[in-house]
Amino acid sequence: MILRSVIFGVLASLSLVTSALAQDTRRLLDSKESLYNNIYVYEDPPYRSMTFGHNKRIYTESMYNTGDDRDLPVDYTRYMTATLMYAKDVHAILEIGFGGGRTAWYLHRFLPKVSVTSVELDPAVLDLAKKYFGIKDEPNFQVVNRDGRLFLSEAKDKYDIILIDAYRGPFVPFHLLTKEFYQIVKDHLADGGVVAQNVEPSTMLFDSAVKTIASVFPELDFYRADGNIVTVGYNGPTRSAEDLAAAARERDAAFALRYSLSDMLAQRRRIQIDGGKVIDANAKVLTDDFAPVETLKNVERHNRKLP
Image 1: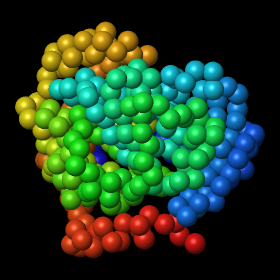
Image 2: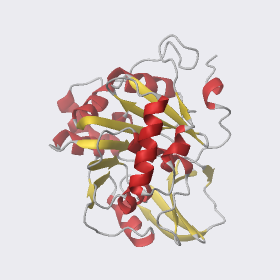
Image 3: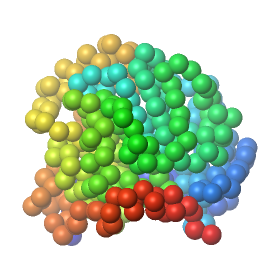
Image 4: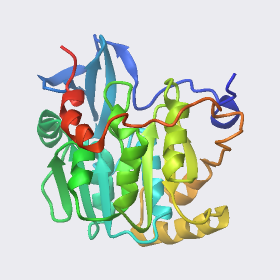
């Protein structure tokens, strides 16, 4: 038995994939059926939520406070910003998986001089984010309609922070969980760069996902956020608690962040991946299982929802 609860506690609720029956008591503002998702936008003032329908359930992908565009109501999105205390520099940030755009917009609001780029596969999601979630075109803020892996494969830029928050119902798309994908991510990190990914901990792939990330980024920290797990990966020497605390104080002061990095640091966990009791020793590293050129050809087909 994997004693994951020793580190992460009882996972009583899921922030990202709060599932419910397809019926909902909130007011439905809009819905769209796209090539990739069945999308619903609900309102329960002052909040709006974007949900995706999957297998007769709905999963909350993003939540927006209409009275405060710097609020991050969903806990795990706050912990994605913990990367700010890890990065050597903060000049360019890339997010894969825009959704309602709350994390990217928060970073843009508090770091207006930093280039923030977010990549979203579904054009219908982008349309609804601009219509209902307060997203606007502004300098240093760019949203690209593209598959995240293909975008990175073709990109020439490097980033100080890369955030991976792409979901399809309760699952991360498989092509964003393989060793080959993380190698592409690593190749696009600037010196001293860091990557964070929200990985749902109750799925059967969690142990393999952690092993796969660690195969490319041997330094891994974990943050528990109301049932979700945010993994933070980097290369180089292990960052001590004292080092991170100093960086957190410096960045908190420099950016006047709403959500304190120093407070988040208290949730940092380190676990033994190989030979430990938390991660299954039999979990396999995930790979593409076919040549990279075939990966690029098949990504779009795999992205599409089942009929």
